[in-house]
Length: 316
Ligand SMILES: NC(=O)c1ccc[n+]([C@@H]2O[C@H](COP(=O)([O-])OP(=O)(O)OC[C@H]3O[C@@H](n4cnc5c(N)ncnc54)[C@H](OP(=O)(O)O)[C@@H]3O)[C@@H](O)[C@H]2O)c1
Image (tube, rainbow, N blue to C red; front, side, top):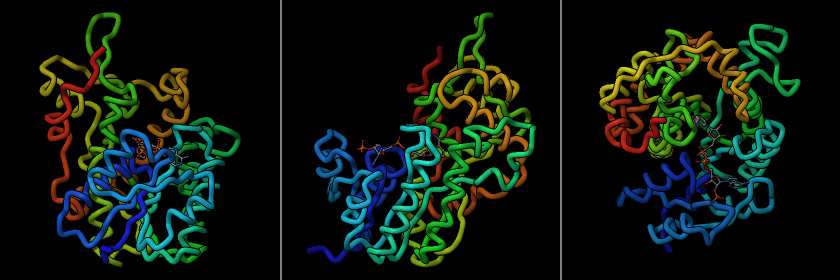
């Protein structure tokens, strides 16, 4: 049996976890071996991970017994929640409490928790610049994660708190690519005014996480913010224009307009962009390109990512 240290990876068939599993498997000299966690060990994606050399184990983050089994014998774990599957910060909080409890009980030596800010520490519920959502939150998909950092701390789990950034892949998968207006012109529309948005290639998150695990206990107890590049909407539109060979204008739409788009979560995302806009200095300052590059030397810039992905971006 291999004496490599097992890293249990939640979301192994998805963006963040998938990037980590790949990063470990692609390193022939790795001291680690990935345990890919999935709800369905028989899916095509799970089978591919198994064929590529990962141990594949069934888990459901709503089932603590399955988490305990999934963490058994592991050295570390990559923990991530899946907000957009259910839109419930309450559910996320329960799941994260289970991650921390299971990690403690199974004696894990290093957990990376993919968290985000509890924006209420900057914008209390009483602050009327943006609406309060679901009675208790400003940015529900951020706040539940940030509030739950305490579960790891209180349980005494050796944890690195990983602050991620906006995936550029949202331009492909999340309907955020350039759109044609009534005038026939293409525009890239995000409510960021002239402020910078830290972004990242989703696959680089897992690669940075691998760098954190490889650093031993250097980042345990630390909060690490990662990004590939921080760009204004205007700069992103210019890169898109160059890369796609089409004129794409930046449309700095108002927050209220974005909140009112009416797709599920548009109010949450409108508040998120406003938080990133209004607290640009903090938000950009908390995410370092230099450290991300140190953790992951192949870190992509937006132009690098575009070069690889330009043909996948739907332009409607
Ligand atoms: N989009 C962004 O710009 C962005 C930026 C920062 C942070 N985030 C955060 O990233 C998180 C999502 O991570 P991701 O993008 O890596 O997810 P993802 O690509 O959507 O992958 C999710 C994976 O998780 C698994 N999964 C779903 N429900 C599960 C459950 N109940 N139990 C166990 N596994 C489950 C699924 O695998 P199986 O079907 O194989 O089980 C799926 O492949 C969200 O919470 C979001 O807030 C997103």
